[in-house]
Length: 81
Image 1: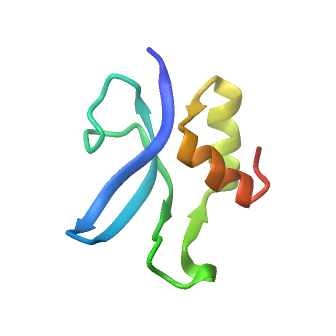
Image 2: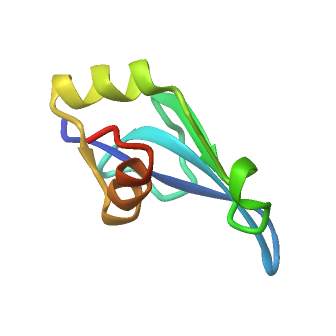
């Protein structure tokens, strides 16, 4: 099983809200996740946009999980990678 760290879209039309989740790579975008490790709210002010559980993300990365392109950029903002 290949594990990915990616975004799960929530919210309404034109008001997106994303959870950063660890999922099987074959699962659908909004399907069942293994663990939720943070959230990304692009409409909020800069300080409230991103929240991640640093220790959990690092643990999943050590286990071999691959972040998606967008998640990789968000993690780089927080200096996790």
